[in-house]
Amino acid sequence: MSAPAIAVFGAGSIGCYVGGRLAASGASVRFVGRERIVREIGEHGLRTSDYLGYDATLTHAAFGTDPDAVRSADLVLVTVKSAATAEAARELAARLTPGALVVSFQNGLDNAATLAAALPAQRVLTGMVPFNVLHRAPGWFHQGTQGQLDVQRDAALAPFRDAFAHAGLALVEHDDMRAVQWSKLLLNLNNSINALSGIPLKRQLAQRGYRRCLVAAQREALALLDAAGIAPATITALPPRAIARVLALPDLLFRLVARRMLAIDPVARSSMWEDLEAGRPTEVDWLNGEVVRLAQRLGRQAPVNARLQKLVHDAEQGGPRAWTAQGLWNTIKGSIAPQR
Image 1 (cartoon, one colour):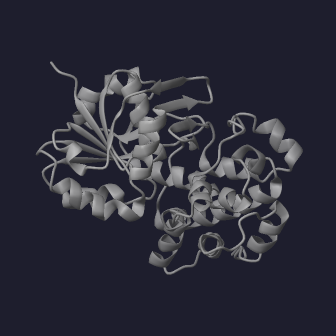
Image 2 (cartoon, helix red, strand yellow):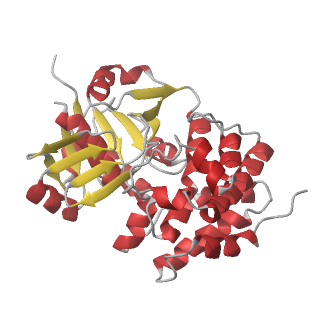
């Protein structure tokens, strides 16, 4: 039996890293990405590494810009930015064979549903990448934080499980991916704070002012989830509410209690920082913006997350991008709604 054909559609940092790990372990992987990434890979090869010491370089990768590369794929990993999901769905619908498996490894909550609506002849699953990937240099993609790949449990994954395990990215399957997605989103509320700080994640999280901003955003989201009857899953050593309590500790206590939380590569940064640095639109509307939309559906407000969302949009237009911990906290704390 031949090895399954895997395609990565929208190969940026996440797609290049996950697909690169699979290809380096011997899987058959084709990549569809932007011209700038195609040039990088052509000139430098595709290098993937992680904070635990893994490091591999593919000198030849099947990388191009033509969406037709997905036509005979058995599995397609969709890793486009959330704003491009509808367009990606249309392109895939015109090319995929019936029965192909599609997994959305994207930020936000509803990308898999968008894909599924356009791909009735394919099986579409929700996935999640819980770790950070930094585009460190041309052709080089580095995992800077811990985690495996989370995905909706489904028998259709059977032909592919071994390939992911062999690549060191074993699939962690869940029955309730919505709860998992919300837990990841609670952690990812830090992306906007990291982007606005302009410094690596480890240094940012070591400063209580930044952490207080994150705690305010998380507690606002948790209150809305309670009102909506949504219970976020526990995907780390601590449940979501306990994470917020730890983050709120003074710096000395935080460093003593949160050693595992700070087990982050010193170079790791959020993808939102990378987008601002490159002058690209961010995914803040699919992170903090998801909390704002949940509040709107409930007839409530989410002023902390709305404020962070606006600050990132301001930064996209040339606004401040190097907030100090105290400066950002001073800006955010006035948005905190009084407890009722």
